[in-house]
Image (cartoon, rainbow over all chains, first blue to last red; front, side, top):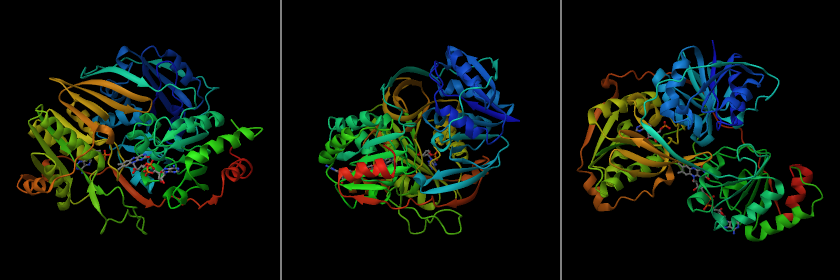
Length: 317
Length: 249
Ligand SMILES: Cc1cc2nc3c(=O)[nH]c(=O)nc-3n(C[C@H](O)[C@H](O)[C@H](O)COP(=O)(O)OP(=O)(O)OC[C@H]3O[C@@H](n4cnc5c(N)ncnc54)[C@H](O)[C@@H]3O)c2cc1C
Ligand SMILES: Nc1ncnc2c1ncn2[C@@H]1O[C@H](COP(=O)(O)O)[C@@H](O)[C@H]1O
């Protein structure tokens, strides 16, 4: 039997992390089917059909799925799950929201936030904010698994031509209503997939001072991250938070500015290839994991950093 | 209205955990334990609703060993009315915890169940959603704002893209984010008063639900250690290293 993977999208385009989940799913079983449920999302079903690792697309177009309410989406996934051994989604706020509902209805114990697939039933997942890795074996007949997207390479996007099969919508319980979504729109690369991330912490002292970070981000084509303290203090919106209870990022370069390096923050960035820390406290724990540490006042260091970047002839994008 | 709040006892978030040499888990002996942080926010929100007069009763529940009662006691000290302790000596997966909570919900008939968005030990992020599914209730995950109305809750949830506002029919399950509120500290007189508040005891395996764990933990390992780096003396050196040594800019 095969894998049912639930695609994440915004009804117009596929969200890129679905591709990472597809490559993880293909390690459980090569027969990967992808459910595209949404409203007016035919384009997404075409995008998914072009992914070579996908064997079949299940396409369900209904206003019920427009806003991915978990109370609505879970019954559809549960119904389709009958024919599958694995039900898979990304371990981001999309997958975390509905997958446990599917698992509970199927009486399955979910395996959350998988960073490595060892086979059809054995997985590695971080626990204790990534301070330990557990290898676990699921003894349930069906497996409900969420994938940490940044731990897998995205599946190639083009070259495939999977069959698209229309499926009927399921009954919905009408117990919740979508009111609105406030998205932070920006021209910058997405935090989860950016090659470079520059993050600010409490040391930034104000929302206004984040423009020191923005200027460097513009220069490096970087995404902007933040510690929980910076978000809590209102310097920047919640979607920028990196860490155990925020996003996990694995960029080539992570620059932590005015961030002390609490384990909950490290949980979201310590797999980055190169880590830079700028902090005026030489004892800050962030230095213990930084490849390059600069002990300095950020209000002096950031303008200098920008000036030095401006002197470079070329900057990788 | 009545709120049931689930509080879990976990290794304190400030503790640097240590993996056991034999790979069977992490050291818990003589390690500081406390309430799972977002569960404090869940209690705080319920108590605030009580103070505003919208909620009549706040019941705190924990599932765990004898000492897990401390988390219920703490909830009572910040304003919960009574407690429930479901005893078990072994680890129960979120699926089993949700089944136990469902049993208790059927008996207590709360209008809302508040849980934390994620336990910081297993990092599962499942229990609230599973409970909502088992009860066929609405769910509001990762709540950073709650506005209780007559028959619904309007809530704001934190999602990867920003914020989302939903209206949930009651009864409902809400999973709380740390940004939902600022948990209060218990005052000494309230800690004393809490000692007199009742905690009902139950035994997990007597509840008539299947608690068999389905996930076998084969081994627990330390993550690969990052090699320590160097300190640079100025910004120019930093840029030079990034450009010519690490080759990332
Ligand atoms: C359950 C739980 C989950 C959590 N999840 C997350 C999470 O997902 N992400 C997260 O980030 N945190 C999380 N936290 C919070 C975490 O524990 C820390 O409180 C937080 O990361 C601290 O943020 P910070 O480093 O910005 O602030 P601080 O710890 O206050 O550090 C500020 C740093 O800035 C430096 N500084 C100040 N001024 C300057 C200056 N002028 N120049 C240079 N340096 C300066 C200081 O030396 C200090 O090191 C969580 C906590 C809990 C309990
Ligand atoms: N043993 C337990 N006792 C009480 N509440 C629990 C227990 N386990 C989980 N919970 C609740 O469920 C939330 C999410 O836990 P988890 O699904 O394990 O991440 C926690 O924040 C608690 O509110």
